Image (cartoon, rainbow, N blue to C red; front, side, top):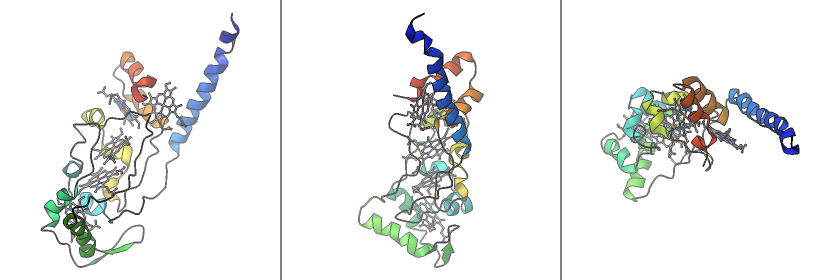
Length: 191
Ligand code: HEC
Ligand code: HEC
Ligand code: HEC
Ligand code: HEC
Ligand code: HEC
């Protein structure tokens, strides 16, 4: 036996400890609330109360890796008619806005021909590959990975989305051994 091989079990153990850490942190859910966005866009009002389907705005979610964030033009498609009621609305976080005033900010961006500089909430490191299409085609709900977005006034990262979270679902949903090997392969998710 070479010296290298003697250390192999130790090396594997070290990996085990590291991966174990992932499975452990998987249980800890982030309770960070979302960032202060340029316009208070409430998913609770749009996707919840008004029941606008997610795909109306995130149109590419089932057909491409990236769901897309709607353009100002998409907003104006409704808000050229929907000026909003002149009433106060208090979010769950305790922020009060006037519906009509908040909508007029959208019109402002449209008239200035500026995109709305939304702050991204869900991010993956550059070395991780993630594709919405395959997951949506398999029938997974948005809530599995994003939480109850339709009940949020301000979107926040409700799930940890750590490696252990990805891996444990891959383990549960693989069709067979070969599929499981593919779904656990480092290069499936890493560049
Ligand atoms: C399918 C139609 C539709 C689209 C598309 C749409 N909205 Fe709305 N929006 C509504 C309705 C309906 C209301 C509720 C108005 C009310 O109750 O007075 C609303 C309310 C709002 C409000 C006030 C409540 C809140 O969420 O703060 C804002 C701001 C707003 N929309 C921004 C946007 C932006 C930004 C976009 C594009 C990303 C957009 N809307 C796209 C229909 C739409
Ligand atoms: C009327 C348009 C509209 C609808 C309907 C809508 N969204 Fe969104 N969504 C947006 C906009 C605009 C943003 C960027 C601003 C923000 O983060 O609130 C966004 C952001 C998000 C984000 C955070 C993206 C990031 O930055 O990481 C998630 C997750 C999301 N939406 C999921 C959903 C889900 C799930 C549904 C259906 C239950 C849905 N959205 C319905 C317009 C919409
Ligand atoms: C299996 C987990 C999973 C499911 C299911 C899922 N997402 Fe995501 N979503 C992610 C991850 C991971 C990211 C971050 C991707 C990145 O940064 O590369 C993300 C990012 C997003 C973003 C931000 C895109 C951007 O450009 O900022 C939106 C919007 C979004 N998802 C909407 C949805 C909607 C709508 C659904 C349901 C139709 C959905 N997601 C289902 C895991 C998921
Ligand atoms: C709710 C269960 C679930 C979660 C959570 C999940 N996946 Fe998956 N993922 C699957 C299944 C099932 C497949 C196989 C789909 C198929 O073969 O059609 C898959 C396939 C993949 C693939 C290979 C196909 C492709 O899209 O290129 C990658 C890469 C991937 N997932 C990355 C991730 C990452 C990264 C995360 C965590 C951020 C994640 N997945 C979270 C269930 C999940
Ligand atoms: C199902 C998708 C998936 C598979 C398969 C996967 N990873 Fe990851 N990995 C991720 C995600 C998502 C992250 C980023 C989030 C995090 O840090 O947990 C990550 C992060 C990492 C990191 C960075 C940790 C840090 O704290 O910076 C390392 C190292 C890593 N993975 C190694 C591996 C190795 C080695 C394998 C193969 C045994 C592997 N991964 C397989 C999804 C995956």
